[in-house]
Structure formats: C-alpha cells, structure tokens
Image (cartoon, rainbow, N blue to C red):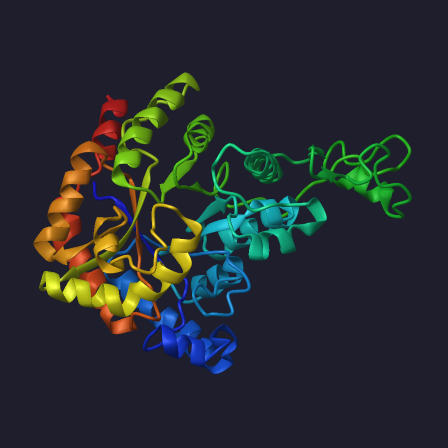
Length: 410
C-alpha cells in the first residue's frame, strides 16, 4: 500500500526577492494578488487530485502582512475546496487551539466533514507565534511558546490538550459539560445558564441531561455530529517534544513531524511503545506523517536555484528567527543550510528517491506531507515537481498497513 500524500500550501505571496517584498509593503494586503492566488489554488488542487494525491491542507496563521504565510481561516478554504474536488481529502495543519473556542471548532469541523462526505481530516497545533497567538488568545491569557519546558510551555500545552479533548467530547457525546482550567461550558459553570425561555422543549426533545431540575442549562449538545465515526482523523503538529508524541500515541492521533529524520526515527519508536501501553496495536510508521519541503529536479544545480528563488526569503527571514535549528546569522550560507537542515529533500529525481527510500526503510510512514511555497513557486512548477514525486518517487515507497490488515483478517 502506498502512503497517503498530502499537499500543504499556505500561500506565500510572490516577489522577485526580499528587496521587492520590502518595496511592496504590506504585500499581504494586496487584494488583487490574493484574489488571483485563492482561485488559481483550486486549479492546482484539481490537477493534484488527478495525479492521485490523497489530501490537501493549509494552515491557521494570522497577521502576516509581509505575505509569507497568508492562511488565517483554514475552515473556509477547506469548505471552498470541497465544492470543487471529487476524491481528495481536505484538512488543516492545523487549528491553533490555544486561541480557539473548542465548541466553535467542533461545530465548524463537523459541518466540513459533511460537506466533504467524510473526506476530511482535522489538524491541531499549539501556536508558536506571539504576534497573533497572544492577541487572538487574549481572553484566555494565551501565550506563544517553543517546547522548552518553561512555565509558558507547560501552560500552552495544558490549554492545548484541554481544548482538543473538549472538541473530541463535543464530537462524540450527545451532551457534555466542559469543566476545564481555561474554558467552561455551560457558563457560568456553577449555576448553569439560568432563565432560558424555551427550557421545556429542550428538556423534552433535546439531549438527555441538558436541562437541570430548575430549567437551567446544565449540559450542551453540539450539533451537527461529524459524519465520520467516531470522528475525523486527528493530526497533531510536532517539532521536537516527546510529550507531544506520548500524547498522540495515547489518543490515537497522527503526529505530523516538522523535524529532522533523526528525531522522527527516535520518536516513531516512542510512539509505538506508548501506543502499546495504551492498548493500541500499531506498527512502526502507522499513524505517522512525515513533512518535507521537496524539489525533485533535473540537476542539483537546478535544485539550488529553486531554493534561492522559492525558499530562501522565508527560510532566512521567517523560519530562522523562530527556530534555532535554522540559523539566523546574516553570514550563514542559507542554501547550504537548507540542504543540510533535514527538512528539505531535493536534487535529481534519483537523489530524492534514494532519500525517501532510506527514510522508509526505517519509518514507513502512513502519510507524507509535501510543502511547496506556492505562490512564490509558480503553480505550473509546483505541479511539475509534484508529478515527478507521484510518478517516480512514490512508487518506490510502501506502507505495510495492508499487510497488517491481512494478518488481522486471518
């Protein structure tokens, strides 16, 4: 069985170089450019669907006036894509739960699950950018963080896990009360919602337990229920934290690795160990999603040229300041660093194939997410590289899930 390929796009508003991005400030508010990109995006996804790409995803990032990652509302995009695609799954990588109302996320994602007729996956992320995490999460005193074990890190993780758990309860239970440290429903939690005029019909026709003895709302029933049972697949963005892997393994979530392969290999073992402790029978690579920025090219020189044209600006000015593994020294040879970063896979088609085959010998991941910096990288070039991956690289990879299913049937 071949791994499921997900195409991840932001988009990144295109410029000739960093200087032009500065001259066109604030590029992220160029309405005509976004109008072109958001509709061309659909054409790109239709072509990807024809190639057999399993899924398409985007992000939840806000306020990027520089035009690096313009993706403030993944749900709207997923619903729009669903109206134009016939087979491809759609989703987000992912909803930043420390800034989100869990009830609204449960409602929105359940609707999209129905719009796609069950071709939907839901990604959740913790949020690492204070520029918007602290602003949009101000009602809950949300703070952005990296996985460093600090007090802010612990608080962010607590908020994240609390709200993801609440989304799952809203998806799977007819009536719930949400008594968290950072979010409660009904509210006020102690008394319930008093004075609701239509309490009688809610008591007689609503979900059991919603109405208390004095007509107060004591539980909530989130509608609609997702189409997929018990709920859509859940993907969790991870970078280096072992706690995130343990959390995914306990809950049957899919860790989505934005990390070096050394980290992926080590944590894939941890995932299987923790899943078995939780009574989940998984094999290595199952429920794993390896994320890579890819450039299968004719020559290594062409690969380096594409890194300069399509990736250098965002890597130097955006990834570098946030993540210590991406050097931010102005004297850094960024192209060399990208090729050695462990997250870019490029070169000739044979080079790309060898690297993926090498990874799959150790961790045959069920999912692969490929990131292209569309629209900085033009649509036709994205499709050219994607087709090379689907026709030349993917046939050399095998996820042994079909073998596991056969064994289970015996």
